[in-house]
Amino acid sequence: MPNLTMLNEVFADPAKLAEAGERLYQERFQHEYEPDHKGEFLAIDVIRGVATLAKEPEEALGQAQAANPNGLFHLLRIGSAGACSTGFLLSNVHSTRLH
Amino acid sequence: MFIQRGYIDASGHPRFKITVHGPTGDGEFDALIDTGFTGFLLLPELAASRLGMVSVTTMPFTMANGAEEPFRVLIGNVEIFPNEPLSGIVALGGFACPLIGMALLRKAKKALFLDSTTVALVNEDELKRFVGSSGAEP
Image (cartoon, rainbow over all chains, first blue to last red):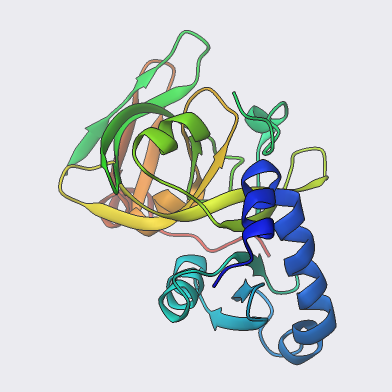
């Protein structure tokens, strides 16, 4: 079952989930995946503490969700700070601001 | 050659009509093409919620100023050419209209044609017959 406290926090602030996912990545998965899988995608289930690797982001997330439909996930590109980059059109957008 | 025509809006941005298929319905949007966005699609959070699209996943984005920011994301289904559904990572956030990123065009195998008055998407393979193909910059 998902952690309901975390689920509530995710809806209010995705940074909480991202922080948990990044922490898990650094502690458990970075050393294992970064040497041989740079540029590939990892979906980290922050509830179970498991990771799913794939070449495409939707593939990694789809497989991770199939394994745990109740999971909370952090999706990242191995070896990159951001999984993708935004242009200047998004300069004034904040992901946690709801309109 | 099959062409999907878009239009240039009052601000000079190229736009195309897209259909987003959500769990509880479909939505049609006039989406901007953002060649600086390397992802698939950005969708306004409110529009996504109306289509029943709920995210329990985050993904870090590198913003134009170099800052890293997590966005809510989910797997979404989009049509930019009729009857050519595409599945990819859709990011949700507080913006006014959807943004089409380069990953969507790459996945659709479409090339963007843009001049001062016209914007269109054409099949990549057909366009390559005219302009040739080139690799990435060394």
